[in-house]
Image (cartoon, rainbow, N blue to C red; front, side):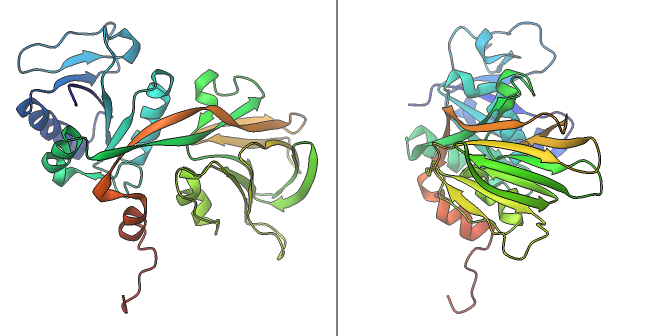
Length: 292
């Protein structure tokens, strides 16, 4: 039974603010205890009658919530993941953004969705994560973990040359603008845009997809989630770009990068009436055919 929730959202967006306020009203109607994220807060503020408590770090609360509600778009969901992952609390996404593939609870159906959550009419999906094994702490500890993808890309107009080994076995040399290493969750993100395959979210496989390869025979490949990837990069300039979901850093060509599937997993909430295939058809118009 849902007794306590924490709400994460970004400030400065009127639609998100409206969605958060509506969510709080619906939760209070059902006597659910609420903690609301506030970035600049020095310490947590306890819950008062009819008002949410406040926090800046989930670990500062005396008791962890049953669920975290991320209000915004998929970008907000990815930021919420970084803040929540180490606590093992499941995340549900309320969409006030554009696509809302991860944040798949519509903001105009908040009341109905809260009822479903209270009734337990949902599944917990454990999603695989990627991790940059080296360089260590490139993005700072947990920030080197990605839910969608890690990419290696050119840092200037010239393409780069990426040599990749899988479990110390040479796979290929890519002459391209970059390379996407994607999880099953990320298969519907950047990977999809470059023609990569779609995987169901429970799948633990990894996808390697080139970005604009200068070769007609190069295609995406799906590999075992137990694989360790090692990449070295060459090019005309001195640096290349590494991205980890929405974060980016530059590396010099003399530094290799190693990627593994993280031993951690992210718990996410999926309402049973909004399963992955339903979301795929309705959000991405997958399989759209006027004959159906």
